[in-house]
Image 1 (tube, rainbow, N blue to C red):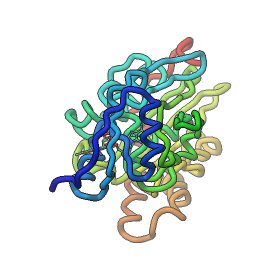
Image 2 (cartoon, protein in one colour):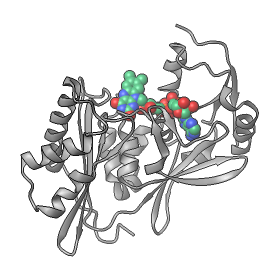
Image 3 (tube, rainbow, N blue to C red):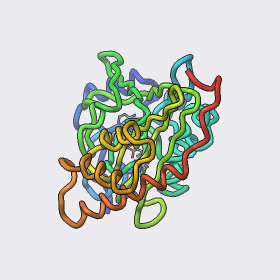
Image 4 (tube, helix red, strand yellow):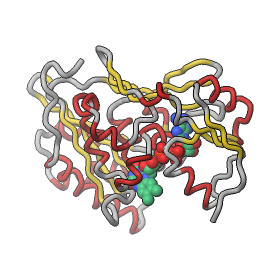
Length: 289
Ligand SMILES: Cc1cc2nc3c(=O)[nH]c(=O)nc-3n(C[C@H](O)[C@H](O)[C@H](O)COP(=O)(O)OP(=O)(O)OC[C@H]3O[C@@H](n4cnc5c(N)ncnc54)[C@H](O)[C@@H]3O)c2cc1C
């Protein structure tokens, strides 16, 4: 199928994007990599009357750091997340996550910001942003505002970005030395969206390890697993039954108790062990905050 007719605008400055968004509001859509938006337009699931192409804005492609944070511009492509040395140093979880995102052709065009704004509940980057406690920079004619990733995802394909706003960059706190990260998922074929996925951070403080877990492909947005995360604080090596029970508790108000829900619980319990087996190397001293 072909999309409905639309007006195409290629913006070369943020001010131009903001002005177009202010003029057209809900009728306009930002075009980043186009890997989700264009198929949706072809299927007529989305029919913006104005498409604002942001690909000419160089400032949105930058990856930089300051003393405390890594800052990733929204137009950073998935394959650049995989190869960027700053991302490798300060956000190894994202590098691990790319391995699960789609296929080479899509990774060449798809952008980090596009994935976050698309907010597919089964996508990897939104879950990583929540786990890494990222902060989103959102811009409009009204200025720039900051929103924590943990408040950014409002439901399937819905975020805190208003109709006259766009996402500019994502700030990720530099992890402490010794921190390790893991991610794994189960999908029908490698590169497909996850049926169930988990990511984890492991921090060592005063000789004691603390864990934080986030699930994706489970609820309407990335799901912080508080009970599972607390398990390691109470038992240094929880057994399989304790893990399965903690997951059931965390999923209770988010996952139905039907066959699909049971499958997601079983897969997630298994993913805990897989994630722990494939943790990244510890963040070296001097590479962190
Ligand atoms: C076959 C296939 C398999 C895939 N598999 C996976 C997978 O396994 N995991 C996964 O995570 N993804 C997967 N994807 C999606 C892919 O990662 C997309 O690239 C990504 O979801 C969207 O990024 P994009 O840059 O292409 O965004 P676009 O398609 O350009 O935009 C997506 C949405 O975000 C909005 N948007 C984009 N950038 C901004 C911005 N800066 N500010 C405000 N709004 C913005 C757009 O208006 C649109 O609504 C798959 C895609 C395909 C086609």
